[in-house]
Amino acid sequence: MSDSSTSDKFLASFSFSIVIPTYNRASSLRLTLQSILQAEESSLLREIVVVDDGSTDETRSIVESFGERVCYERTERKGPAIARNHGAGHASASHVLFFDDDLIVPTNYLRDLKRIHQSVACDWIAGNIKTASTLPDSSFVRFLKDFR
Figure 1 (cartoon, rainbow, N blue to C red):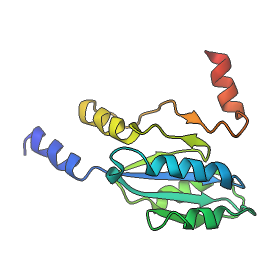
Figure 2 (cartoon, rainbow, N blue to C red):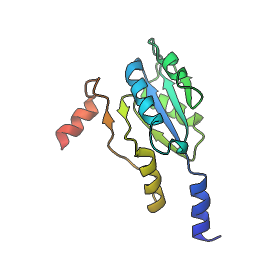
Figure 3 (tube, rainbow, N blue to C red):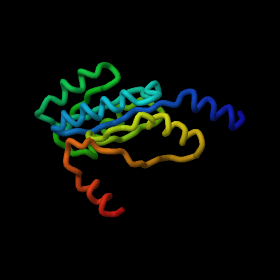
């Protein structure tokens, strides 16, 4: 099989699962989910797996209000790393993206990620996404701002 036909088959089945761990941040999660679902080429999105790490707020009802493309999973206060791994276990797309629950995704994000994969052989990609302004910066975001 030629490289181009292998590449064509790969791109034809190309899709994303997005895993989002969360804990008691329903309001920012709602904004994150809205921004993802409004992205260009959202047809590339197979599912969003939200892993609620024991929240006591309205996280579950927020997730369920988005319909079938957003899946709700729950763990009991095991931390974000365990929640991410749990979500990855439920992801079914060819590519898994890990987002935080306070990200605002640019409308061209999914399209651009697909373009990168079309042009560069890589196993992972990292990038910069704006966080919801309704929340204070996390310690990681403060570190990145200081680093610049």
